[in-house]
Image 1 (cartoon, one colour):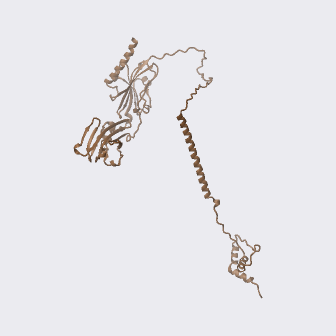
Image 2 (tube, one colour):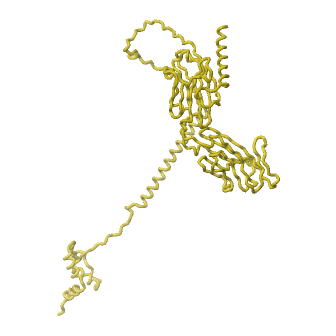
Image 3 (cartoon, rainbow, N blue to C red):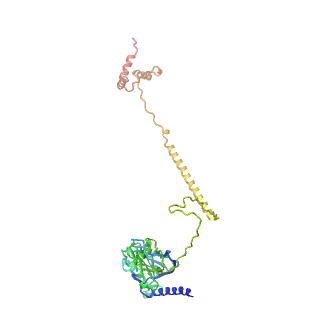
Length: 451
């Protein structure tokens, strides 16, 4: 009975401390007492071992993204009340002030205040209201960095009678009945600081700290163990031996792992540990509670004395060991039909690609051959070069006799050809001999005398 009473008392004390944590003030150094308890865990570890209190949060991952103009965006959507119930985007606006209107018909008649991200007023202004503007409008606010998404709906009805204009709340959304041709402002107001202003010192906006409550200590008197900021600043509290045995990974804000590692656990380390995650800019305050219990150490089984030789301190026992091949177990799994079809598809695609490459090579080769035949230099006919022959004055006289007496035919043997190549003086002499005057003189000298 005494053994059963001890766990019951420990559980009762644990739940009493949890209830007290809700009614009493937060721990020392915690700036906001509105933290939400996300989870509670019971951890048991033997004495002398190492325990890891796991605390993960992807919302606290530090990205150091300075492009706030793309991190905050608001857009209005319209769900038409027609038979097709089509949804269309009306307008977008980023925190930098850039607006984008999707329909050209709405240019100049639909806009949003340019100071929306400074005063939190994201209302949509519609000028010259038409019958086609009726439907359900939704104002969607997105903060990608903080993972916040909010939506506000407003129903717009259009009437042609001024007496029917009114505004009311139907229990889920605001309903506006406006006159055709008038101007209406559809409200969307969110003045939370996260939507209206940024903070340049983002590295000081994210912090995680671990607290410890020894048994019998209230939540507001808990001991601070460690603080870690997104900038890398780390603060340890308590005695030096506590600082050395309890720590958080340096990559906590890049991986979202804020787990606390406790080494060489002793009975004095038992108690309630709490992980506090604060993102002041995003308005995030979460807590995770761990109840750590220390059990007796695991007894070590004494080793029986053996006859194996004792090795010297500097001798390596693995030097003369014979390597034993590893035991391999072959497991054959039946192939599925879909797997075979996938492989067949890969083979066919490879063959088709090779066929296309070969076809392209053949076509290019034929094209090149055709071009080579069209421009073959061996088939180009070159005009004959002019030849110049030099003959003596006797040949000039013979040519004149042949013109006058056609019966006389010159013989090739009697023709004397003078070769005066590259001799300018002889060429000039030959030109004089073949001149008409020299030819006439030769004719006179060669005439037979009848006397």
